[in-house]
Image (tube, rainbow, N blue to C red; front, side, top):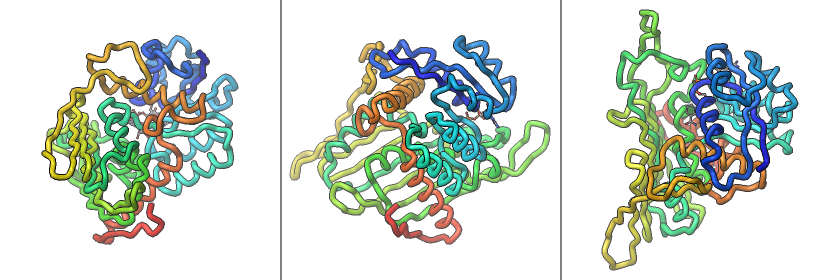
Length: 385
Ligand SMILES: NC(=O)c1ccc[n+]([C@@H]2O[C@H](COP(=O)([O-])OP(=O)(O)OC[C@H]3O[C@@H](n4cnc5c(N)ncnc54)[C@H](O)[C@@H]3O)[C@@H](O)[C@H]2O)c1
């Protein structure tokens, strides 16, 4: 199996998730290539220590990402840094000729996103993708198969979202994700939004107008040093979009709910599509369960409950009766990235990482959402975002 040599820039939560996925690559039965992590860069030596202790293939650690980009051994760079650094670091990686997996939102704002896409267009030899792992759950892959087959008929309504709840606790200390200067004006939209958009954008859904209601609920948080400091980002976002179905050009309402304060929801990623011929819904709150209803006119309206098992897109050693979880999604997403890097196209339409063009669509929606919130009105997306 071909080995692809990686450098990581950003060694926090997501950097470690990737290192863990790479460490259990033997779990996969038919990967296109194997990642080997050679280099790691972080702002602090403390986060590099974990990598030195846990990644035996590491040959370079540095506090300066430019040094990592100069390493000729590194083929691909994974950039998992706070949002205000996405443009600078992603553009530098592309200009250095490194293939890139970036993190969402792929630029702190639309301008930063356009700068990354411009760099990518200047370097078509560089493979560029953005991370999003939830669509790799087997239940949602089955729902995506129904989208691929146009099985829903006319779409009546669709709802997608990602709901968190730990910010309900006003005593939770602040971090960069709750500060506009690091997370961006989008707030929760930039942080969680791409998760709710990946499948719909891949399905070709293009909103023609949008109404957003954004909420700031907890306005101050402890800074961990005995002070209360402003919490400047939007906590929750609700978007209602009139959307065109590419299968038949018919409009349907699509809601996107991204919330940091959704009481009781730990990490609920959901997709629901209701159609005239079929309907389906899946949620990470109950990840084995896929609910589907097939309807023929005049027939019974019966929801089926299907227990999905360990049925990954990229075959793996775990038996099909067992449970599939978040770290399996990460492994599958990285297998998808390497598959597309090696073969030039995804294994199937909904088994690919987010493309730069899809990130640009997400930024158009988030920018329109801020505008809608400012005006308190529906915003038209003239070029049918
Ligand atoms: N795909 C997902 O499910 C998911 C989940 C969480 C976060 N994210 C995204 O991943 C990215 C990182 O988030 P995180 O949760 O890992 O953050 P984190 O705070 O845990 O880690 C950020 C890392 O970046 C490093 N860093 C900061 N400045 C740097 C610099 N100048 N040079 C090199 N390294 C620097 C920090 O030292 C730290 O190691 C963000 O874009 C975030 O939105 C994605």
